Image (tube, rainbow, N blue to C red; front, side, top):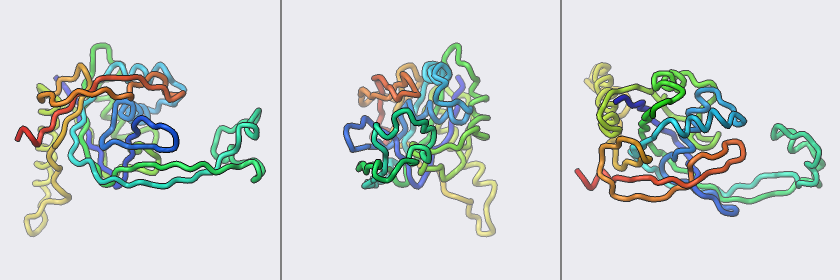
Length: 252
């Protein structure tokens, strides 16, 4: 069985969770909708291409190997927005258009937004029958993305190349371990004069989270319900799904 493996590392990431009111939380690893959005951006899909996004969500399964959940950073956020009356019958395709109203029509909204500092994870993608793109095509798109990729918010660009690889393995966890071994072998080929490899070793996987239908290769320690199953991308509608979690540190 083939898996597409890639890494996600950034000084800041924000993987949205269920948001109520002015609080915008973030969990410590990407969910299904975030990964579908990442692949869609790499492929050049626009938000209005509902059918293409739905095909991505239905045709691939995801497993996330959390190496580090990072540290919580909470931001008190303010933004100016015009009232609905000021926007009525006015085109506002961009933020600049939205703010092109008299200052008296602008209001300030407040929110609290969570970020994860120095979080890192590996992602495994498994293709189901009838998938519209091969894993090799997805890997090529991640290497040369059509749109700029970011980890949850536009202010969270990746700190390292995603380095996508398609690997054959009997499970997502085995593929991730093979990925780590291959990266380590590459590091060892480029020692400096003192015998030190460049960069840092990829951290071990401490927790594995995966969707139904994915060959994870780990025992389930917890099953939970998450509201990140993509229904409509353009209108930000999401449904429930079951996610399984294994705490790998407890098994070692």
